[in-house]
Amino acid sequence: MKLSVRRSSVRFFVLLLAGLLVVQTAGSEPLLLMLQLLATAAMPVVYIGLELSLRKPQTKVRRLLVPTVAASLLSIPLMMLVWDWQDTRTQQHAHAIIQGLENYKRQQGHYPDSLPQLVPRFLPRLPVTSQGLINPPAFQYSTDTARAPQAFWLQYYAGAMVEASYSSRSNQWSYED
Image 1: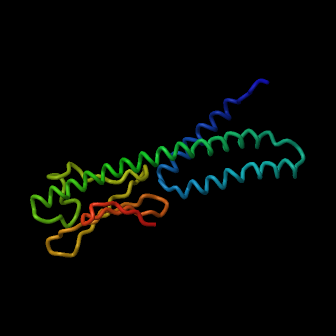
Image 2: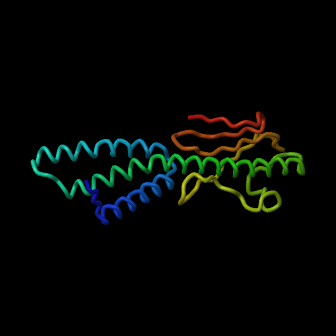
Image 3: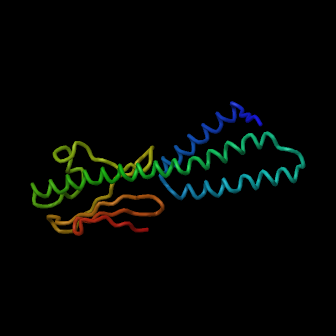
C-alpha cells in the first residue's frame, strides 16, 4: 500500500499548524484550546454527515479535513511546551522585578510607588510578561497605603482566568481563579 500525500495538503497542514500556534501563543489562553478541541472533534462528524447526505465521496473535503485534524491535534502538545516556556520566562522577569524592588528598599528604606521608578538604576528596562506575542501584558504592581510603603504585591494574568500574585509579606506566589 503506497501512501500518497499531495503537496498542497502538506502546505495547508503546515500553514494551519503555524496559524494555530501563532493564535494560541498571541492569545496565550488555554481556553482557546478547548474551543479548538471541540472544533476538531466536530470535523469528522460533519464530514460523515456530508458523506451520508450527499451519497458520494467528498474528496475535496477529505483533502482538507485530514490535514486540518492533524494540525489541530499536533498543535496541542506544541502549545503545552510554548505555555510552559512563557510561564518560565514570565517568572524570570518577575524575579528580576522583585530583586529590583528589594534593592530599591535596601537603599531607600521603602518600596517605590510605581515600577518605572526602578529604571534605570535598579533595572535596565521594565520587563513585561511573556504571555502573548503581539502585546504582552505588563505586570501589575501595588503597595500598601502607607506613605513609605513597606509591602508590595506583583501580579500577572497566567491564562485560563488565573491570576498569579506575589506578596512581599509572605515571599510567596499564589494563584487564584
